Amino acid sequence: MRRTSWTYGILAATLLATATPGAAQTVRIGPDGIRIVPQESARDRGENRDRRGERYRVREGVSERDAVRIARRQGLREVRQVTRTRNAYRVAGVDRRGDRIRVDVDRDSGAVIRVR
Image 1 (spheres, rainbow, N blue to C red):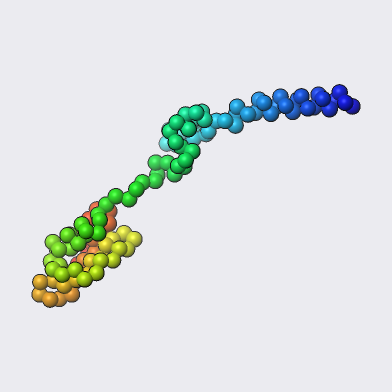
Image 2: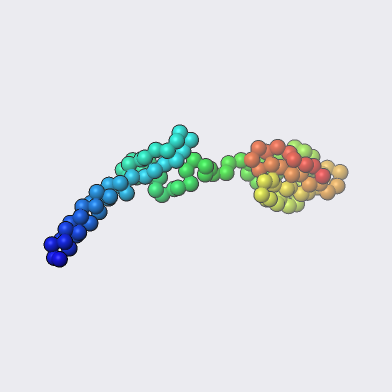
């Protein structure tokens, strides 16, 4: 009885020791297929900290100040309010004749969407 317990204990320790190197690898699925990346390589590139990968990008585009400049080119003289929506800046104000005007500017490209 004691001998079989030792045998099972040694067998379990051996299986645990052989399974550990397999758990130390990272599987990466990307545009070039499935790859196994060693843990040291993944640690060097910092992939463990940021799992968002290449899909994540910092939004770059038109600032609020640029949107006001674009709206002034469309005839806006006096800026009253700048509202930031999901995809556009809405610049409201008065044109040169004193009429209220609103200019919508795309946040990504800076294109004028609408002038009302």
